[in-house]
Length: 434
Image: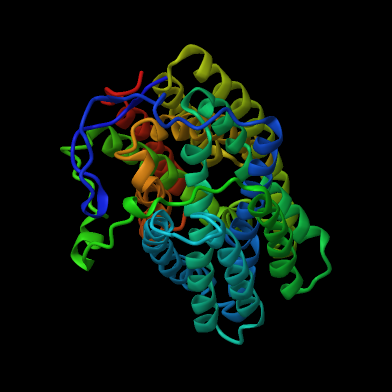
């Protein structure tokens, strides 16, 4: 399958020959084995386990310990600044990974170093005496884990040929919910120790990433492909003109809108369960685990089926369009919930939509990258801003929506569903992928 590449010039001053379709026969990776896909997926689970467990449970509980009277506001500040670090860190470390000429390869140093620094940052949060130090630790953790994310996502176009990417993306699509469910399970199963709640998921996740790093047939950059360039060239490489790369822009916007909807859910579900459904703080970890489990089951089923189906049919857009609408329906179900079983039904619907969306859209995006060989990690890092920016938007908009709705979480999730639905319309203008 040929990859669609919009016209333009490559990043960091590299001139790139422009054509509508590049022939993957020239530089396509060899087909990957099931064993490689398994270890790749295991590492992806590990990375999400370390990063998302604090976002879902432990960070909110830690902030509530230190600032019980204004926990929601303090958590919003921590998440907002952390998301800003993630938004900057992912494309920055992606670009550095693209230019890495280490004898250990382009991606391996960032996989190992990022997990080590990220784990240390979580220890800072767990032992912090005040919210300010929690904020510092979370910023460091976001920078470190986003260095890992930039490298690990770039392995997909590095190592997997286009004809397998839907299937492999479908497998990767189940990794986030498995990481979420595993993290919430570990937290509620551990003794009541805040350091253990932060550290154990990070250690388990690091072990999985290190295993991939040990067997990865990592790319080594040819010196001729790594011209130093100037600082101005380096900075200019982060701008991708939507007029030159319209398909990349529309895919980015679609991801941004969908993830904004998901960010409202991940940010406010703890407080939703406490303030709307009336549960105690002690009950929240177990309730979130059950919700994550219901969501994860649906993500796993829909992701595996849709990824392979998109490879077989050669179509990606229709899967993404329908998936965003289903996710919106899930958020509206949560908005209407008056009891926990309805909340669980909404979580299952969001899982179905999320599984299809992330499985197929990732495969779609790797086919419209501006330059797969010279700037894959950077371009995917720029695309990942659509994942991190909503972590700033949702905490910033959430208090205003709650204020307008007199503290009613129903309106918060109604707005979140409407934003997610717009993702369907954003994917329609794509021309380079069916």
